Length: 212
Image 1 (cartoon, rainbow, N blue to C red):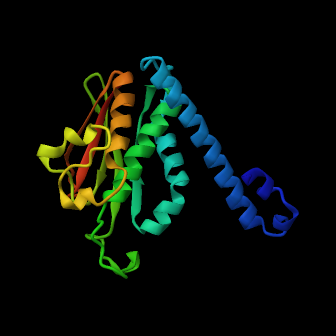
Image 2: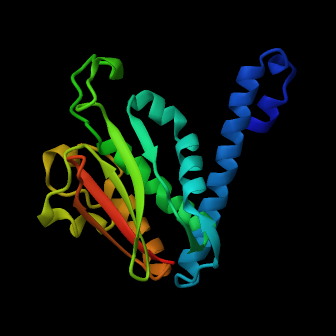
């Protein structure tokens, strides 16, 4: 297991490798907890625990968990001023992880073969931005990317299980529909709404309205 590997004598003299394994173990444990809570959530008709959840801290933790994907992707993620809201911490963490991971997949996927992130200018480099604004009755949290976007006629359909839409730019990327289907269930259970608009970054904006 990761725990045994991290404690092995062979890694005693390799603190960086041991620390990486410890982080991986911690990430796996958090994911196991998320999955358990999601299964419980599905089994009780969508009832959720209520606590004060710091979305900003949760989003930063998601970025840390996705650090390997972010390094391979070569873009940047900005998290700006997210609020604290009532809800289930694990489910809201899953919500943010799905939305951020999807945005990573879809931001600037047409990067030329062999091009590094250092070779791209600021206008074309991959970017995901997570922001929030106060609205009547709660908060509107948005995850923006600068990818190809989602055509308006496809925006409701991609919330269906396993749906990715008909646009060639999005159909080739795995993991869109099932993530958004899960996201909608979580937002609905928190008394909120979720949808897709055009992003000011040029791609898609997945937004959610959560009660304060």
